Image (cartoon, rainbow, N blue to C red):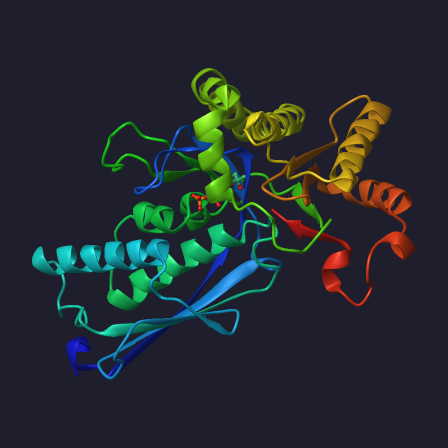
Length: 351
Ligand code: DP6
């Protein structure tokens, strides 16, 4: 039976979380999701954190539908529609260039999508990146698209384009107005730095009060520091960070990661009205990391925070036991939240 005639096609894919060590914050084009600076991230192993998405297309479906973590959501969300449109455009383009035999399934088929995260959504744990990368990738598979998916993922959520690759990934901001050169590229594969570890210190698994999209828009409108950062700071940091990654220089990598996180949060405070994602506990973690490093006379651990209070800590495998002991000492289990809630504790995962 030609694929065109199949009554139902179902595809399931997973996508990882990525943690930016040079942060993306601010768009130059809201609609196309084009950033004001390049960014660089580390993709986490999928053993601990991942999104799983199943997409089904059928001639019997009468409308597109989507379920997130078991609940049906509005399929008309503009970001979701932009991703769907882009994938269907790529599928049409592929068909019209005639390099497909047999031709892909009818593009008129409606899609049903179900996506689940195995970690809290919208708690500053980069769930949107994994979610939109997974959506773009799964839709591409179900509609038979195999071209670059940066744009489709980016149109869902900017940072999602970096979750399309493993290892160390840069999102080049690009210069073109149409965004064709705003793409994600792997800087080094996942096998490059096997000793690198990531600890996620969950301070709060609640939804963040101000989402990244609205937050960065206000920052672009009001923060002179953000403009300075994008133009005068990030270009040099991208070069430096790429070098640290290639050389597996943890000292340089860790210092720059912390500085970039701090500058990102400084731009949030420079936003008007100000945005503060860090909590008192986040600041205690920052102090703990600096004390730990001062005690060792070198950068052994490095924190970074996204749009929420949870800390992501990078270190090398031989430092994990000692640092986890230090965290347990400063945040003893009895004062460390509800024990029945698996996210009240420190979680480790291999990068
Ligand atoms: C602080 O990619 O979530 O995590 O493009 O508006 O969806 P939208 O924003 P999003 O922003 C992520 C911001 C960040 C830094 C980063 O991941 O680079």
